Image (cartoon, rainbow, N blue to C red; front, side):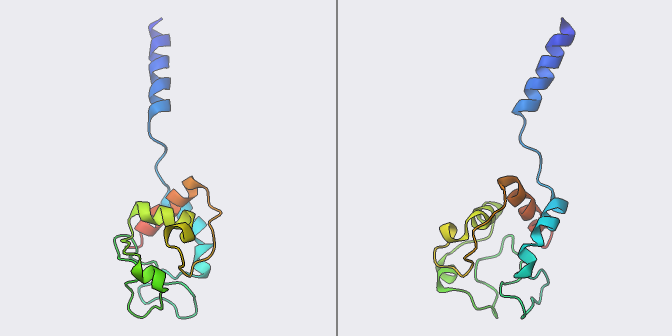
Length: 123
């Protein structure tokens, strides 16, 4: 009987625990779709249309001096946190209406978590 109670407690604990942690390695692989537009080097890449994402976590939106941001992004007042990045990646136009990133995400929420975990490694 004790064994059944113990098994039940373990099962309840497993079901009530938070979701598995985000995986930066998976995020790096998923980021390949983003890398077509966004560099990850400090100096950026003038051949790509998006700003560098190196150091994005904790940075104010539209703060890279030499990048041509939309007026919507400049006026957004966003600081890129895990949460704001997740919201933006999920639906850029819903987060900052009128920004230049017109693509709506096809990533699942868990994949977005993984991408943000990867972006955190770029600081």
